Structure formats: C-alpha cells, structure tokens
Amino acid sequence: MLEFEFDRRRICNANGHQIGSLELHRQAGHRSLARGLPGAALALLLCLLLCLLFGWSGAAAQALEDPTRWTLTDQGGDRWGLVLLQQVDPAYPPGWRLRLIALGGQPPLDHQRPLRLKDGQGGAWQLANRSRELVPEGAAPLPPASAQFEIEGLEPAPKGFLPLRLVVPLASDGPGPVAELTLGAQVVEALRKLALQQLVELPASSLDAQPQEAAAQGGCPQSRAWNCMPI
Image 1 (cartoon, rainbow, N blue to C red):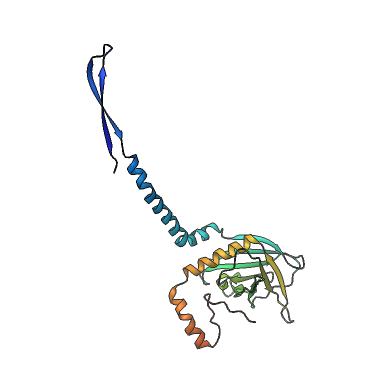
Image 2: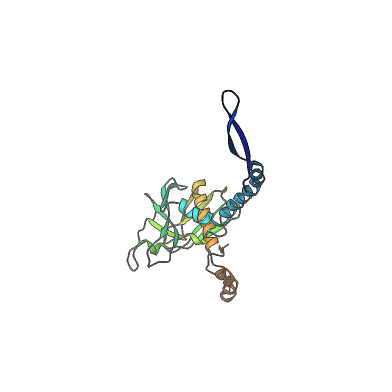
C-alpha cells in the first residue's frame, strides 16, 4: 500500500505577510515499494521458469517452419534434400515427418526399410518408413527419388551437441545398400526439438501400456516410447 506525507506550505506576499497556505501531497511509499520488489521479482522468475518447463514445447513447434528444408551431401558427393514437415492428409496418421529427396545420380530409395541414425557415441535410432504417404491413398507408383520417415522413433531425444549420421536405405536386389549423410548442428537441433515435443505430448496411459505390449509380443513394441534397434 502506498503512503503519503502531507506538507503545508505558507504563501506570502512581497512584504512577508502570509496570505494563504498550500498543502502538498508527497508520496512516502518508496520504502514499502522497495520492500515489495524482491517478492515481485521472485514471482516473475517463477513465472518464467514455469513457461520454460511447460510452455516450451508449443514454442518449439511454432519456431520450426512447416516445411523446413536443408541441402546435404552424402559420402559420395551426391546432393540430397532433407525436409521436416507435418502430415496433414487426413487419410494418414498426423505428426511430423522427415522426407529425403535424391537430387541427382543416386539409386532409387527403399520404401520399406527404416531410416537409421547414429550419433557416434552409442546413440542409435530408427525411423519407420512412411513412404506410402508420399502419394494419395491407393495411388501408385511411389516416387523413386523420395522417401519419408516418421519422427516418432527419435526417443530418447538426441543430444544437441553431437552430429547425427543418417543411414539411408536404397532400393536394390542386393544385400541392402545405403547412403550415409551427416547432419549439422541446425538439423540436429530441429530434430531434438521435435523429439522433446512429442515426448511431452505422449499420453501417460500409452507409456504404462508398453511393458505389457513387450511381454505379450516377446520383443520390442512398435511405439515411440521405446527405442529398438537391431544389433
């Protein structure tokens, strides 16, 4: 609460005779305000922390443009386009996708095998192949120079400071050739944001169901809450 001090001043003429008075109201609550500032600052800090903890996921999605594109080069010098985009076709499950586009000279991409990622320090992931979503449901054929993968396999989220290597499956009658791409800091950070966002949005009920699914199937459940990679 603000407090005020009252100060009565005399009004005199040129001869020094009082001809009236003036009452001045001066704010005297500076000390009270100063005492309240630490509490206000603490409340503001708490609000900022809550925003960081619970509001960051939406901000991450807004900060990432849809679609977001990069151009990469594989180990043989061939160029690739990498696109992060949301699946909006109601015929397919919603969510973020990673799309790869061969920009010239590469063999056709495999539309069945998953995309594998490695960080060089033991971290490994695989993203389910969703290339069927490249065309309207029931349409064929699929574009040979493109493949699409589901981001939900990125759990746990990759570390933002480690580069990621993509092992891209190529279509062939042989033992399964691949192309390898190295992702820089910007792409890794974008993938990390999406992985953390989907982890926050994952319903607790689906997490509880995973051990039962694994036991019933005798193996790794096909869920984004688990990271199953063949050895």
